[in-house]
Image (tube, rainbow, N blue to C red; front, side, top):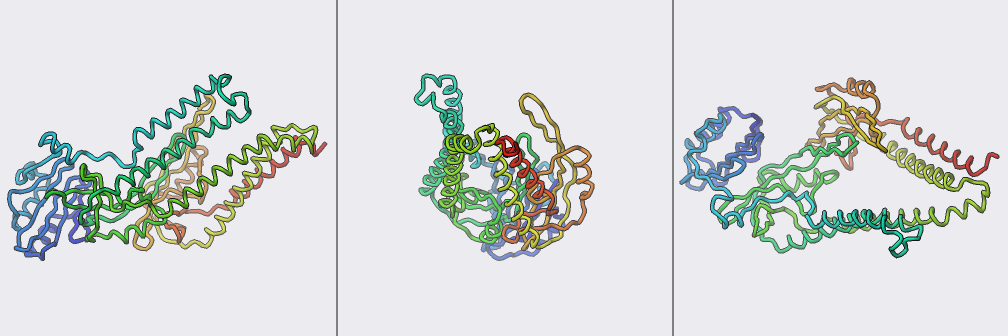
Length: 462
């Protein structure tokens, strides 16, 4: 059982009964003094807040319901309730009157329904994306009856259609959410937790990645009932370079303005405006897509006649594909070289290996199944009083090979080992254990080989 005690912003992990006793034995406390005992395993907690007359408001939450005593507690009553809760005695709930969102019929259900996870896309957006994919499939079968079906660019349009639809739907969903939030009510709240958390993600056929994100929790009152929230922004604060700044804005105990949906106060956030820089970001994405489409269009239309004019005996498709891949590898080499040069000057900080092992990666291509293994080294480090977690071993390189190779990498970083972590001072969440130099030269070698293949297929050596 993992518990955490917070006294006016000071945290104690796995507090003892004496820790709780000493906190309440210091009564009377000034108005606004608070204590929170939180069980991280089941999400329950008890909060004690000092009143002006020397008694205490006590609120319990078992993860599903909220409980209050019939009248304010004395310090001895509050201590007794906390000690029973810490010991998980069966009768700790008996001193509270419990209320849940669905106990009071339709009225309670409409007032405080369970909030949908903000990271989930709306149903209509998913339906539009699925419909665009279905349209691509149907259009492939009905090509002969469709406008421009005999054009060489028909398939190019079909390939890009779902990606464009997905991008537009995502932007539209977020903008609609921001517009709805502009009409939300506001209340004064208080930050009860401000730290970082590790967000892990794994896509099919890829190794697990971990990203450090701000973990901020706050509470506020609506209609005499306490509501808790943890959403920072409508735009979804994803951490990265702004993690430290976010935690500085929302320190434990700070008073904040909370914006909430009057129909569902659990749907709340600390920031409801359009995320700063989103316009610039969208412009960059749109520009990149336009440039990419333009390059593909030219490769399909302008490149073949150009190659045929200068190299009459050339294998045109192979020349275009090989040269294009060579240019792409060359761009990767330049990007890797610049990143490696910058990383050579990154500062070092001591870190600790949290876990060390390997991870199986399975991929299916053309009905064939391939299995590789990747080292799974997760480590923690601290920069500017902020805790970070990462799994990146070699900077900018995803490691995946044989089981013996993955075991060898994991053996270099056993669990509990103290290690040197290189981190980007502009974005401390970007860190690595090694700065490989050989990888970028490998990319250059591939680019040279592809250029040679293109030249050979163009007849330059005959």
